[in-house]
Each structure stands twice: as structure tokens, then as C-alpha cells.
Length: 201
Length: 201
Image (cartoon, rainbow over the protein chains, first blue to last red):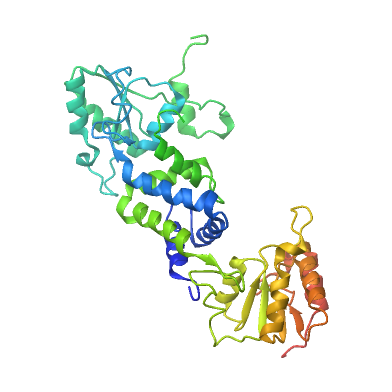
């Protein structure tokens, strides 16, 4: 853009490449930052530099952390014999928020997808198998998306674990908490109907 | 959030304070950045640091630039005797994009608003008057929002310029280019009707 200096244009161009942002919102953000130089711009520049320098992938599970192994893999109080398989770190965080899993994780980094060129080798299943053996894992909980890719990947992982002395489980499908039947898709209603349980259990 | 390291949490918290973003989109952005460490995270951290260090307000007009006076005020080829008054730098950029104004600018930094505590002294009108005299300005074009605050501010500035040998003009109001009458508000239709011009002119 004419008459706009390079530092501004550069910051704007990079911000526009963030998910959910475009040229308009990037411009708004740059002006917002320039008006809050000390309270926001400077801390944010430093925070992103720190992020880049200190945060790495955990060599064990694929989580992001400042330490490798990450604080989950390094926490002796967590169950070493239960591994939960998730697609990415956002899903790992979602499970940690829910606070139901006390074991370890394996982050696949994606789902099998011939269209996107994601093949079994990309999911680091060898590392999962190695840890299952080394840690004496007794349960692998597959917590992948309830989509075609998620379920294909889940089946692939279950197959790969076949022959190990380990139980393989998956998340239950059904009506989401707070969900209204009227607005649910047929697949969810059918799954919830089939997997119905006795009242009071 | 539990089990998420400080550098990640800090970056996320700061990103969530940007306009249009919240905790969810900030989390998505952090993961997006960590996956594109060299192509996006590092350049963005550097770009924001450069923005903070090099970009300042122009002491003449209030524009943002790496130089003071800014490249517009310092451009001898621009008309020194026409000043366009805008609310903020986003509006200055919008006018530059339109490419219709060949003169200088005065950025008020806001609009008069008793509710938000923005008083005449906050708009740097003294500086505008000083430049009108020093540069021998013959026209001040007031390009403020067509809102109550914008028009109140426009009238205030016109009053302040009263007694100077300078023409004060404002942007025309009417149907926006590409606008369909059916979807325009009554005020715009009335303004366009009143300010109607002869066909072919």
C-alpha cells in the first residue's frame, strides 16, 4: 500500500496471515498496538520472542512445553500406564481442562487423510508403540475427532496396537451435555440411541 | 489454565486482548504460530519489535511513521495549503488509498465525546491553527465520520477556524457508490435527496 511505511506494512502483512484474521483486522490490530505501545505492543513482541525461543515439542508425547520431556511426561504422579491419543495440542489442552485424564498423552499431529497427504508414518505411531512397551501401558484411550478422518485414524491405531497386551478404548458418542435433541444431527441421535444405558446407572 | 506453561499462557493472554480476538482465537493463533516457527512466529516477533522501536507519531500531523515529520508532511510535492482533518490514522490510510487528496493531514486522534471524556483540548486544534497560519493554508477539508460525534467535532473545528482566511469544507453526504436505495437508512436518503445535483453534471 502506497504511503505506509515498511515496518507497519510488514507487521500488518504477517498479522493478516494468522488464522481468523485478514488485511482489515490486521490493520485494526496494528493501530490498536501503536496506541498501546507500553501496555500491549512491547509485552506482545517479547512474549512472541519468548514463545519462539523457549517452547519446544516434547520428544515423548508431542506436547508443547518449555521442557523436554514436557511437564506431563515428567510428572511421576500421573498414571504412566494410561496413554490418551489426541490429534493436536489444542485437544490435549481441552482434555486437561476437563480434568478427567490422569495419565499421559500421545499427540499424533494430525489425522490420516489421503487428500492432505497425511500417511500413517506422519502420526508417529512407532513412538506410541515404543512407549506402550517401555512404560507397560495397560490402556490406550483414543480421543480423536468423531469425523471420518478421526475414526479412520482411530481404527488404524487400534490395528497397530493389535497384539500388544493393552486395552484400546475410544470416547463415547452421544448427546452432548446441554444438547437439545431437536438440533442434533441424525448420526448423533442414532449413536446415542444405540449406546443407550439404563436409567440410574 | 492448569498444565500450560507460562510462556504459552502469557502469549495467549496478550493476543486475547487484541481487537476481535478472544481466548479461543488466541489459543488457535498460538498453536498456529508454534507450528510455523520460522515462517511466521519469528518474523512476527521481530516485526512487532520493529514496530515498537521505529514507528512514532508525526509531530506535525499525528500520522504514524518511522520519520518525524512523516513522509507526507515531509513531501514537498504535496499541496502545503490544503489540510484534511481526519479522526485517526486508519481514516488517513483510507483517504490515501482513495488517492483523491494531494495535500496534508491533521489527525485529531478522536472525536468530541462528553461520555468518553474527550474534550476539545484532546484534539490538538491549537496545532492545526498554528499550521494553518504557518503554511498559509487556504482550505481545511473536514473528513470526519457522519455520526453525531463526528459532526459535532466538525462544527467545533469550523468554529475554531472562524476568522482565519481559510475555506472550511466537509465531505459530501449521499448514496454510497454501489448502494441500493432499498437498504439505505432514512437519514442517508434524505441527505442525498436534499443535496441532489443536475444530471450530467
